[in-house]
Length: 235
Image 1 (cartoon, one colour):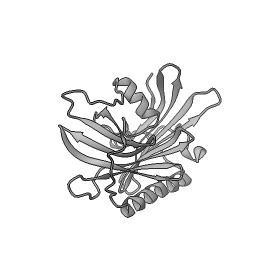
Image 2 (cartoon, rainbow, N blue to C red; image 1 turned 90 degrees about the horizontal axis):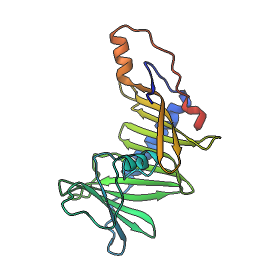
Image 3 (cartoon, helix red, strand yellow; image 1 turned 180 degrees about the horizontal axis):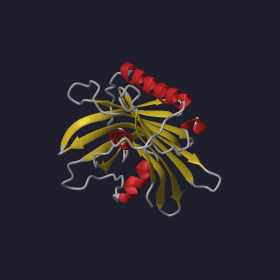
Image 4 (cartoon, rainbow, N blue to C red; image 1 turned 60 degrees about the horizontal axis):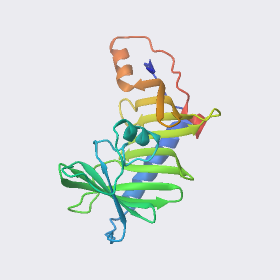
């Protein structure tokens, strides 16, 4: 099923303020957080394949689960021989404490876990200096065991996902890639529906890309009216 493409899309002022607040809150936590050289020898360790996409295996929402299903990726207690691109995940009492990212067999960077209320932050650090890595900070927001929001933040950009249960039991997905200071602040957005039975299925409904707007302006085309539900509905 293909999503309906639209050539122009905007957010409500409330939605923009909400995303900017998340961006600022996360940047402050990253700035204030110091690398914690804990003893991880008494933790449980698992391994998962790294396909160079933080929304797979590092994130914990439905996008991550769908990607792992699609690529047949499973978290395992042993690393398959010859694997060079993977995450090494450290758990303590069932909670993630640290994630090491390996690329071509080399330790590229680590995520340190920080918990605040119902949020889990994965804050990236360089292994050789223990300084912040120029990689997205990943944040998951939980309602019980379910991820209801998830976002990736890097300085002036937030990539946002929201999952809302509907009356028929499906889950509505809202995705927004937002850089408020950019020439095209809304880099992309999409609305779709997850159906969960024995497998996870996703059906996109509407999508927008900044390039669609750029291309429409270039061709002096007339914009179509945006039909993606405004995020204000959900916050």
